[in-house]
View 1 (cartoon, rainbow, N blue to C red):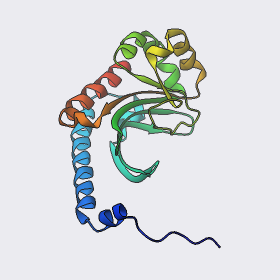
View 2 (cartoon, rainbow, N blue to C red):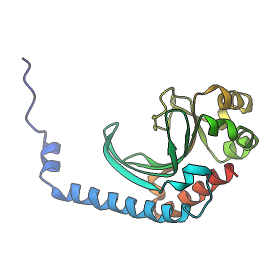
View 3 (cartoon, one colour):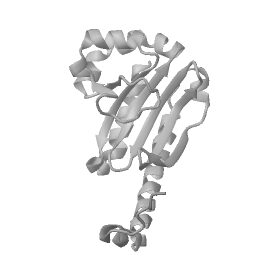
View 4 (cartoon, rainbow, N blue to C red):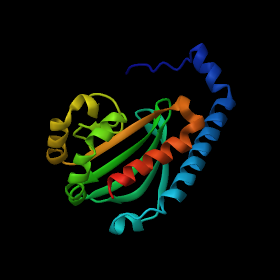
Length: 196
C-alpha cells in the first residue's frame, strides 16, 4: 500500500491556519446569492412559454464544479429528459460569470428561425455556442464552446438543427464585478428577447 503524503507545504499550512480565507469566500458567495436574487426578482416579470415560466426561479450552489465553487440561477427553467427551456446565470469561482440559453427538443425547434435570424447580433456581441456532447458542460472554452464569429453562419445553422441540444452563452470576467448586475441584467434581457 502506497503512503499518502500527509505533510503540508508551507503554503498549505498558511492557508489552513487562516480562517479569514474561508470566511471571505463565504461572504463572496453570499454576495453572489444576493446579486442573483435581484436578477431573479426582475426576470419573473417577463412572460415565458407555458410551464417554463410558471416554475419559480432557483438559486443553487456547489463546491466542486471542476474543483471550484459555483452558484447558479435558473429562470426560466424547465428540464426534462426530452425538452429543456432555461436561462442559466452562472458564477464559477476563479473564472467568470456567464449567462446561457439552453434549449432542447420542442423548444430548440420552435426557436430555430429566431435564433438563425439573430446570428449576426449574437456573433458581434461575443456569444459562444456549445459543441460539447455533454449537455451539462459549462466550461466556456474550446473544445466545449466556440465563438460564433469564428464558426460562421452556415456552420451555426447546421448546429441549430443537428445538435441534440442548443446552448448559447456569454461570459463576463470577474474583474467587471462592480458592473455585474447591469451586465447580467442586460444579457438576460438579450436572451429573453431572442425568444420573443
